[in-house]
Image (cartoon, rainbow over all chains, first blue to last red; front, side, top):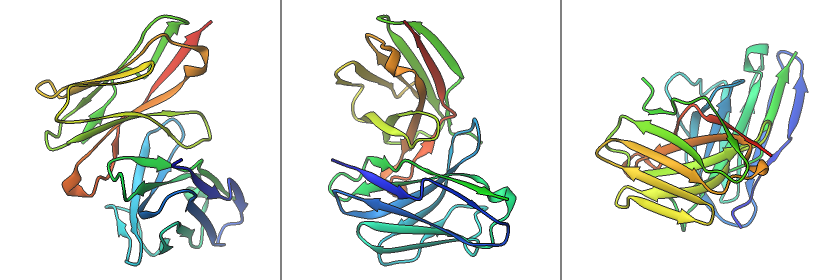
Length: 116
Length: 113
């Protein structure tokens, strides 16, 4: 149980394009999902908290217009990197919290974004 | 200001021996602590957790110890296996802050056969 998927696993795009990443909880309902970013050899940095049916809460320094988050259902959250630039290249990971056991987050496999 | 720190960036241990990973935190309001294991280009895998009302939690080869007065927790893996080679992250959260996780910097563990 507690499986979280992400799609795509890898994406390469041109500068200026937008990229959408999906995060799904496969066997549980997640009222809350989280989006993280990891730079090489660094820890995971929380970008935003996504709550089903409401606006996402962004961490300080994260541009909400740059990183659009939608959490339309209890099993799906999407992160759209708008007008991507090379500095947005990173490893993006989502996590989901089972509403029945809210203390633990389960992570997706991550998405490697490369912006040329 | 790093609220969760893992001061050892790497650890090398012989197969069969004990691996001890350490983590320190500064925020006394944290009330839940977790350990995750991560392979390169993959998401973290949940290993074990502990509530601040406990001082020990055990699950198979993994035991987490919490010393609240010292604001310190540790993860013991025994016996260590080559498949345990990965980066281990400790994380802390507060219920009142929506259980958002604050991660340490990670410790890379290498288990030698």
